[in-house]
Length: 244
Ligand SMILES: C[S@@+](CC[C@H](N)C(=O)[O-])C[C@H]1O[C@@H](n2cnc3c(N)ncnc32)[C@H](O)[C@@H]1O
Image (cartoon, rainbow, N blue to C red; front, side, top):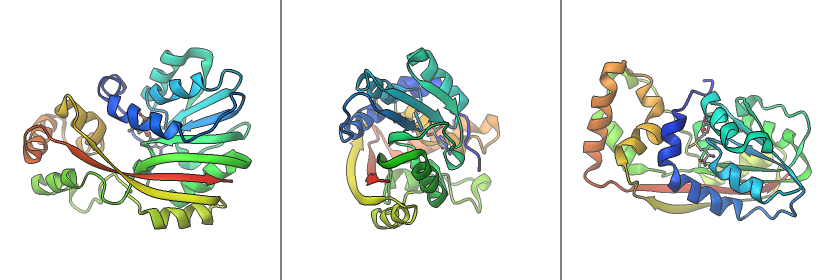
């Protein structure tokens, strides 16, 4: 499946919790300030902007599968970044990078073998991968709510997410050629300020686009009701550190 479009203005409104997680991941990337770094799945560029601040003499390449997200990143960072739309499983860079940062993106991609091979090819020898995405056990109560509500349009569909385990991810990274691989899980509870907008934009986009437009609001309301009042999403993040 090629990447889908995202509602970038809405993501910009509700994604503060993801920016906070992303900044913590960025803190794991030691930089001298003159490197060339890829943000793989840049979204609206909130974490990319923090990366730009750490590279006063460097270069940032921002890639996302959604043109709307790329446009928002360009509006935020202008000529400060080289931003373009591409599917990460087909990534081709004109010049390799010293490091890759990626936050909250890889679990939207089904083929991690191909993804990691493309990322490895995009890195200079010895380049670093510092990433975090949803891992095994992520947002379990949301998965239960989605199953409880159900919908014929989802019959036979495995859903949009690839919540991999730490062990299989380490093996896949090593098979792609990465070394010094570390993977570990992290529990991060998130109670969004506007649960409905957060749910529809951050969580349910792939579900909603499979439904007729006139059913989407009712479906989102039903999932929200199944989650109960003031829902907290129990994120289980999959962290990755590796070297090419
Ligand atoms: C939850 S957002 C994360 C954005 C940003 N990194 C952050 O932390 O806020 C997930 C992003 O992954 C992008 N994405 C999903 N599948 C992709 C793919 N195959 N190739 C490139 N980008 C993809 C989406 O377009 C979206 O912008």
